[in-house]
Length: 213
Image (cartoon, rainbow, N blue to C red):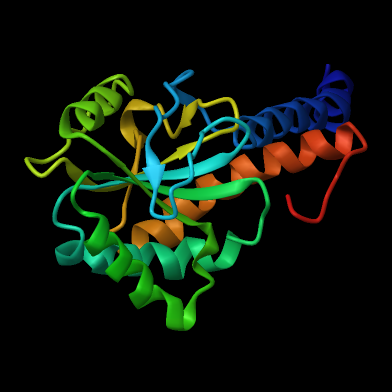
């Protein structure tokens, strides 16, 4: 009997432990889908008049509201903690949805970022209030836009237009608050790395890895 216990401890327990920890690692190498297949943008134009799409891009998505300049500190936080570190990736874009009529304020924000940032990855696009609200509603999120059609949260959307985050009840996370630099440096950075890792792994598996992603 003692011999069987010793053999169990030596051979079976290590295998069980390995399987347990291996499954745990796998669960943390894929970020859950909060909302699948959100809609793409309409014919909304950016500051340079170009159309922006969510298709085939990893997107950090924000909603400025009409008080862009009043909340410019949020964009400086996002710029420092996430954008400047990753904006060189070809398959990544930062998109901020803004109400029509705020183009001049958005340009002022871009101009304020230019002295210390390559702003080519920032995209400010413009739509009517009704279009913005309808687009946000179809994302089916718990958080709401404020009266100015903005939120301090930004969202991670993958190349298939799935909104990603954490779906466990005790650690639910659908967006990341740009008002708090620590949240960007911790929760968002961790989750963002997971999404990038997924695509890097897929590229390597298909023998199609690039230095951009």
